[in-house]
Image (tube, rainbow, N blue to C red; front, side):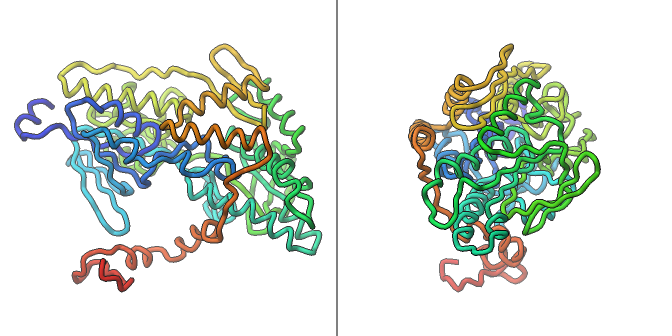
Length: 467
């Protein structure tokens, strides 16, 4: 690597794909390295995904959990941030291709770190997404915020008791940490925050149903914590229905099949999908070129040092990898990103790299309701108020920047010590914008690229001279 760099007269080019935990921590780890870093991501922010449900339920604003990546890296002179969705990786030519609104950019690299993460999986039923948004992006959270608060507004206008019941029924699919936290917060929203805000309806009568095909709540946790979470959910009014597999979702409700094979329908206006993940499609692209196996969830089988077979210059980290049954949590991405960055530094310096990535499991936590959480840390498993305080401390620590930490604590105090939620604003565009964009498809790109006006290239039809 050093020889090539000297012969070309440039510093090694490191391309990082993704601005999540893995990508961001890898970039920061390379701050003082003699390299030029290009971080390519399809969003301009770093998303603190574990707190998305608090945006959806009005506790936090999107800015508090999604600071601008450029702002985070503005003092890192060797790092450049590029907006674009990566559509191709050429391992032979060592290039990464990204596009945004019709603009295509090719990024050459000497070292590559792929941390593109994972999206929501509907287990082959992608049509469910129209009626049951997932919890993987800011767009998802804002859309759900509009649907959740909008359901109460529409119920206040309704006169038919059956329609009111449908509007005040919320179904969360998936009893993992995300589903448990979301169901708990909707229940608290209805029973505490909105209790006195309406005149014709009683928000405390809202049904919150948590579904899962698994036989227990919080499958990744030990049984006693799952049982504790189950009891606490019941105490705050969440109906937990296990062994229930979703077979259909539409605008008016959801169809589930119980363990005995019986199918039943739940009438609900608001459905939230928190079950299953699918790794970035870049995993398949890498697998096809390197020969590495890719599993059904799109995760690629990497070597012990997180590299691809035959490509020591390519590291894959986070939710995209299949290695030693590592969990899909932020700590795996953070530690993997740092490990990959250290390997890049060693290769550039001509030193041997670490032969194996070792994950240090710091434990798992999930909140259930105000003052209640469960924690599985090291050799200790416990729940209740102490676990809740620990959850708060850990999540504040991993917030990026003092400003975000400070405002997050203030909003938590307002919501958890009081009854208010300061982020209840929702618009029709947030609720229906995603569906409208999907219907426009490629036509939206043509009309909004602002590209050059040459024959055969996209033409801007907005009529603005600036285009």
